[in-house]
Image 1: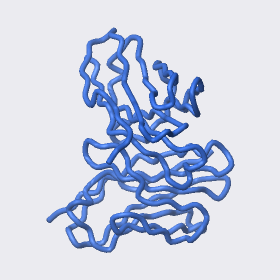
Image 2: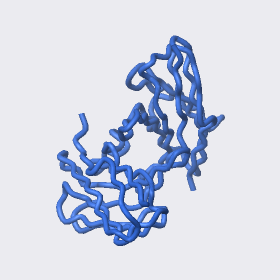
Image 3: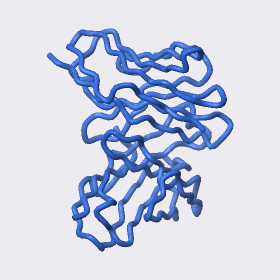
Image 4: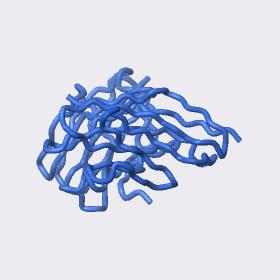
Amino acid sequence: AQSVTQLGSHVSVSEGALVLLRCNYSSSVPPYLFWYVQYPNQGLQLLLKYTSAATLVKGINGFEAEFKKSETSFHLTKPSAHMSDAAEYFCAVSKPGGSYIPTFGRGTSLIVHP
Amino acid sequence: EADIYQTPRYLVIGTGKKITLECSQTMGHDKMYWYQQDPGMELHLIHYSYGVNSTEKGDLSSESTVSRIRTEHFPLTLESARPSHTSQYLCASSEAGSLMNYGYTFGSGTRLTVV
């Protein structure tokens, strides 16, 4: 079975600081990995995905994530936080060859201080 | 701009009432999904459909039912609402074969409160 662990239910950064949101996965086969963002009172929006191509994946709004097989991690980063980045971020893992329906983590709330 | 619409956005209803949460998409996606979202918890898949007249239960046991009579419409029904059904319900869709490339398209959700 596949699973996702997001370390830290809340992450607080100052505007302009580095954003690092952690995601570790468990999968019996090389997985597909996703990050979604949810702004207040909205649904989830795909930020970026890893599907076995380049290990460093760039997404929308300046975010990127690096797939590290040895660490079973897919951490999300952004060099400089903006106030508009304040949102809930979800990591998800999917097993290729099956239904592809992803398993989501519990989410990390990103708080950005002025 | 979202092409998947959920109504109502907010609903407060009494115990025992029958309710239907609406979900419609205009993208012609074959696959549609219902998720339950509670604060600090994983999104739980409760139902999904791979096309008209196809529905499956998800990982989370749910007392709700769904139907898929038209490609664009995937309503979720609770025959008798209970306080334990209080949650946010998210509808999503994906094009057949493209889940890995484009992920899901989510609606804005329905926040249900049963009193």
